[in-house]
Structure formats: structure tokens, C-alpha cells
Image 1 (cartoon, rainbow, N blue to C red):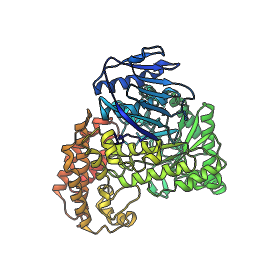
Image 2: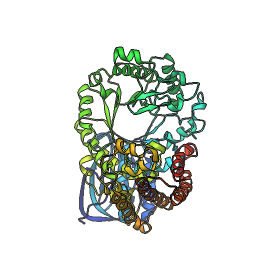
Image 3: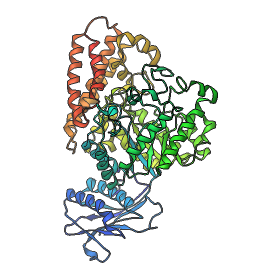
Image 4: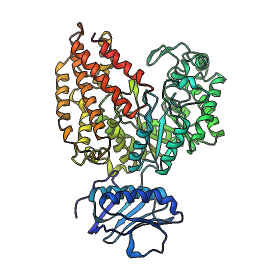
Length: 619
């Protein structure tokens, strides 16, 4: 056999041997190690995959079983492989052997073996795999504060998929969507995660060797708290202010000099952290764009914005340390003050994030590394502000992060998935980014040039026709049909949310390219039709296959609508358009159905209000 198996992630070393192992019935899955119960979950997953292949093997434990009965051995032996998360997987003509130093690494080996079983069935090619990760921490962060809070079933399904790709950390980005008992006003309309749900998710993740890390923003991005009368006095700018992003008519960040601000952070940590087994917490602290524009104006003028920011960051860190946790924080503000980076305590982890293909991971990683600060690199799926994705940017952004993270000694690779401006993109639009990022985080050199659409078809959409991965890839590249490029989104998305009376101003603010060319939008529309043509031929072995088809069909229809809206705007939007209004109503109706299929009802009204505003433009 000469054909290399298709795996996600690709392992570090795979050596094909002569011959095959023909699976036979009445054999054993043997748990061989000092703690056999810790291997049970991996064994059960293997047992299920073997059943799909056509054999029923019993699980047994111990080192004194009949050799001729053993089909696969899960062997935990300290010091047996070169890396703490590494494993060896050997398939001979007689049996299968998985060897690692601990149960987590055995699980990773089992995930690889399951992919081989699903690919080859009853006849496995003989081979040896030696594998270990580049980044010890490989995570996904899902935004649950920009309107969408996933259902528990959605989260469980996502965890299973991520675990199969050897992801070992999950974060749920939280501003106001945890059900704090002491702060019910904040989450009353949000369908939040309850403490009981966090306990259940934490246990589910832990069984799959994923660390569920608590995440709560504690400085900026607290509008959902500060708009309420109870919390508004804690704000930097209680009535809003001018910022580098424009005028905010609502409060955004805590005032760092108000002692009640750190008291609120204490409350958050005290109630949130006990629900998690993780001893880490991501406290956010990104994009404090209003700092110094309100109540801190004088102290910022005296000390500088960087110093005031760092002082409050240290206060939060002290509270985290008192609670015996390690603090993660977004590194975007402190990196604006590189002379202060060296003053960060070394027991904090900086999260170096950026979502464009050319983000300065090299420059910023060098600053953190030279200062001795542990850090992760944090690229993104590029799905937000798009509806259908931004594939090429996502791929290049993730490669950039992985390569420069490795070069500068980053200890983690965190794939972020945001929901800006209504969280309109369906979750499966992000699967490509999750899958490719997981592969790069495991082994950069072995996965940088993989056939991403084929891998995503097989291991995200479970489509052996190799249609869905390519469709997702190509729909995410519709923006490349035009020369128009935007930061942090696509032109079609922003046209959907641009009011007619703002159109000329937005053209000046946002665009790099000629928006007056009607042909751009006509070509994009034709390309959408071309990309979607093979959808009905996809054969997804997933319970939610029909839902995925409906989600991508809706996303494509939204993008078509954006093309038609662009032409209407270019014509001056002078007259009502009944056809576009009817289309918008139909898209809204379908959006409601799709929303409730994966997300909780809270947040829907805020999200759909943006679509209703789009529809009302036509009336």
C-alpha cells in the first residue's frame, strides 16, 4: 500500500509497512496501565468505531490476558515516548498497539486510530505513527455574548468534534451570559449559561481531556452591565464618550480608579470560578478604548493610559492569585505600551490576538518572548461580519499565528470565533477554521499545506463525496471575486447592515477598492450560484445533515440578497423595493428557525433587529 491516509491533524511521522491487519471478531480491547478506569472512555470510543467497521470487541484490563485474543492494547507507560502528550500507534498484521505516558495521550492516539478505522474499515494497512503536538495548549474560544448562546446539545456536539482533532482547551467568551445569582438584571434576557450547565459541560469536556477555562471580561466590553442603573456609576464614561471607534452613546469600560470596580470583579470571580475544574481564568481586559476619556481623564493625563491600565490589570491579577488561579488576559492594550510589558508578572498569560492575514504575530511575539511573559497566539476563524466566511484570510491568519508562535515560544494556540454585529453566521461556517486551526496547533509543518476542503469534508462534515468542505471553502471566498477588501469582514456583510443614508460615508470609511463597479456584485452573485450547485450531491453522515444544508442555503441566499442590495444602493435607493422587502421577510423567517436549531432564544431579538432594519430600508 502506497497511499498515505487522510488524517486530521496529520501526524508528525507516519511510516507505512507491508501487509494489512484484517479485523476479526471475538478479540479484546486491553487496558494496560496503572489506572485502567482512566482509559475506559478512550476504549469505549474505539469499541464504537470498531462496531461501525463491523466487529464487536470486548473491553478488558490487565497484562495477563491470552495474547491471541488481544486485538488492540492501550498501554500507559511513563517515559515510553519522547513527549508528555505524544503517542505511538503501531498496526501490525496481528494487532494494534497504542503507547503513551498518560491517559490524555492515549486518547489522542485513539482519535487517530478511529479516523483510520472510519477510513479503511475491516482492513487496516500496517503502519507506525509517532506523534506529538507543537503547542501544549490548543484551544477554541466561542463567543457566547454577541447574541448567540448555544444550546447544550450544540456545545456537546462541538466538544466531540474538537476533541477528535486533539483540541484540549475550550473557552466560552462571556460578558453577560453567565447566570450570576447576585446579578440577575444583567442576564435577564440573555438565556445564559447556568452554573449547573457549566458543571455538566465541564464534566463532558474533562472526559474528553479538554480543559474548560472560565472566561469573563472584567474591564472593557461591559456595556451589558453598565447600561443598568445599578452598575452605571462604575463606568469610565457613564453617559458615553468619543473613542477611537467613534462616539459611544453608552458606557463601555469600568473606571479603574473606582474601588467598586474591583469589588465587582471580586464578585464575578467568586461566583464563576467554583463551577470549573480549571485553575486558569481568562479575564479579558481587551479594547478599553474609552480609558482616559471620562472619570480617569486626570490620572491618565498624569500617569499615561498604559500605566493606569497596567495598575488595574495587576489588581485583577491579585484577585485571581488569591483564588489560586492563573490569569489569562488579552494582550492588545499592553502591547501598545511595549516599555511596560516587562513589568507584567510572570505568572500571567498574555493572549496575543489578531485576525487579519498580516497581523503582527512576529513583532508582538518577539516583545512578549523577550520580556519573559508566557503567551498564546490567537488567530480567528474569520467567520464573523461575513455570513459565509472569509476563507483565504482565515487560512493565512492561522498560518501566520502558528509559524510565529512557534518561532517565539508561544505556549498556546487559541482559535477564536466571534459574533460581531448580530452573530449572523451559522456555526458550521466556522468548522473550516476550527479544523484547520486544530491541525496547525498540533503540528504546523505537517499540516500547513493540507488539502483543507477535503479534510473538512471528511472530518467536519463527514461527507465522503468531498463536496461540503469545498462548498464551505468556496462560499467563504466569494469576497475574493471582487477587488474590494475590508478589515475584519466582507463588503457584502457590511452592505447588508449599511443604511442608505450612510452609504456614501461608509464608502469613504471602509473601502479599499471601487464600489461603483456594478459588475463586481453581478460576478459575486453568479459565483454564489456556481458554488452552491453541488450542495444536493453532498452525502453527510451526520444527524444534522439537513440542518447544515439549510444553514448554507440560507447563508448563500443572504449573500445573494447582499449583491442585489448593493445594486439597489448604487442606484441611489431612491424608491421602495417590494421585491427586496419580501426577500428580506423570507430570510428573516428562515433565520428564526435556524437560530433555534442550535441557539437559545435569548439574544435573537437583538440579532434579528439588524435584519429588520435592513428590510425596513426597502419600505
